[in-house]
Length: 329
Image (cartoon, rainbow, N blue to C red; front, side, top):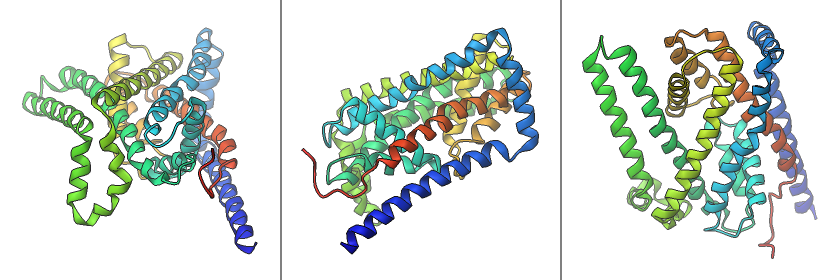
């Protein structure tokens, strides 16, 4: 009885800690930078009063589609462990999003999805989660390389042709390398098993070798679909905040921003917040845009796609069952 009571207490305390920490980080992010907050509120107020305010509503409507692609990916990935309905997969994504919100590099995303599984072999899902995240990285790298190519040719090639050519070659190598790794997950498992210090991780990542090339291709297409939704959302917000560019410049600026955000390690508990804003302001600054408008669009994108869904995910976190006696029928 005492063990059961202690478990219930720890479960309740853990849930409460996640709730409080999430709310605290949201407060710290939005309300403790007065200058930025006041400027952002003014720009946001003007944007929402403009005839184009419907763009903000459309961006918000696309939030479920954004995470819906991720849920479909997790449903396909999780099938190797146990049957997962689309709704369960969506719930797992929301839980992972909330826990990932309060951990560096969104490491909590792994814990959230693992805890939503019914199987006793939950930890074997780590490899499946990694494949899903790597697919998204591959999509970001491939499209982002094209976006950065525009900036290299337009702004650096005339003055620094040698350096520019080297950067183009580097982008090509990175793109090919991530594709080869994605379609050779068996090789990654073999490498891990051959390295003694990390050999003990093999049981947790061995599932990566079970996905066929056709399954990987489908996951990559879903990743590209999610990427497209995310890109459209960012462009809509840039237009709303009066960033005026050509369609090509919008697309390349956003693609380049996502690329830099993905390859720069995050040390913040707030995941990618900060890295994306800095890269967006730099790239769109090259295009002659006001940094404050770009910052406003980027912060709004983060608020809509990360902060708000993380709050929604708190409901599912509170319903988690951390301890299972067996596999439910």
